[in-house]
Length: 351
Image 1: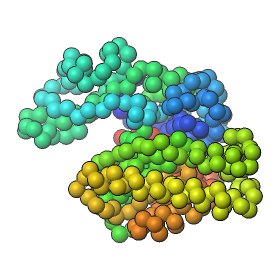
Image 2: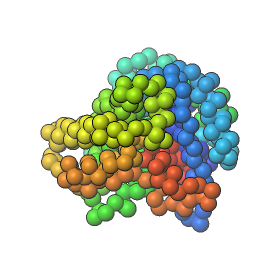
Image 3: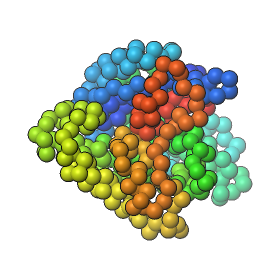
């Protein structure tokens, strides 16, 4: 199982994260991308722990029901490992080498780049373009991940009746989905901060002219809000998640629990941006895009715009696609920000 590799075939995007499995099926119709179906299914606690897929069979059962519900076309899929599970390096190589020679050379020099025994690693590479070092060389992106990270996901998809044809890197999938919507952002911003607010982790990506040039992870996410609900109302994690999603909490939830969480989230974003500014030539950004499961919380985008003093929008990678008539557009607007990775994976069909 290689990373990146895809020969033109229809692929279902499957994103397995800490709390759910997300599936996206995109087709091309009359030259346009068409969202045929999508689905999100919650994962019971304990199936994914610290980004490690502990119970592949249980995850597979959920993938099975999701694929059935979405009536997916075919069984080929693209999925991803998280960025922190992948070592990436850009190296310069002789431009005259064939792919076979290039791979042999990389394997020969692998101990320079990868701190694990080669037999424990899945490795792949992609030629990026001309080298900055010499006209006779090209830049090659090398990616390596421990085989167990890759195998867990391949096994889960196999249990779910899908065959993994592409193993991608989560951040690359998100960047691909971001590329679909960047031209729709107002005032053609040059520097955009994409803030992906996940369950346990928030990742800041800085994109310049649509391409990611920086990323930084921090331990903060929607789990903090779930815990605050549990503590305040004496609920289990399951009950807290459900009542948060279905908005069935008491009236004091907004001022006492949600507003402090929103303020804390904006503080975390501000801190991440300051960290970026201190290590780059920039001291401001043109636009902030919020993504991830917690980004569609009512009031977050508005308060973030007010506090950050910059235009803030919520991610929707499907904004320029046609949508299948059976898809509920209102629900899609709520779900879209958390589907960035799954959407980017489904786009691997059109490489």
